[in-house]
Length: 211
Image (cartoon, helix red, strand yellow):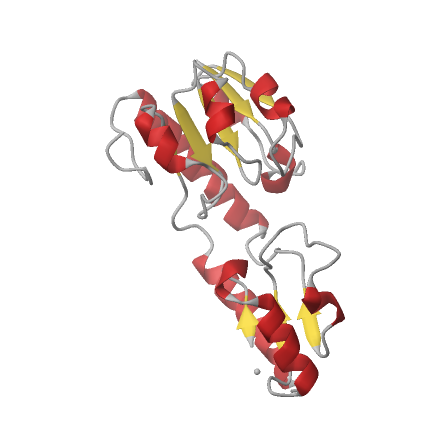
């Protein structure tokens, strides 16, 4: 079994271990690959049975170039970076980590709330796509919404033309509310359990049901 981690640095900048994955076979870890569609993704997945990702996209085109791929393990709850519908058509299971950081993300939300309350309300540290960013920027600039505390934006890393970068009273942090070491360790442990269950023919946390 060959397991390829495409963007390991996001999950593990060096304070965790990939050892739990090694009992399943050969493990190859790349710190970074690409956050947008790129030929390098498929190149690095050649011969891989399981891809492990966080933000690196796995598209239809990449799947078609990786005939050995049997499963995609996402080191996160969100799995929108994977074409999970097409993966299902190809018999490829896509697994996520549904619960790992409820407490720390909640604590971070309260921290943002306290920062806002010390000065002036909107808090979003769940999914960037929940907010129409131009509308929020307009509301902040007009005073309709007095302040916003955001840990997520619609496209990450944040684009230079994001209107919230120049909006009044907008506090933005770089999607870090989930990243306490204990939470990242839970991601690592649950992902290892996902891979183990898949190899044993009893997959869990499969988001494209029916594979």
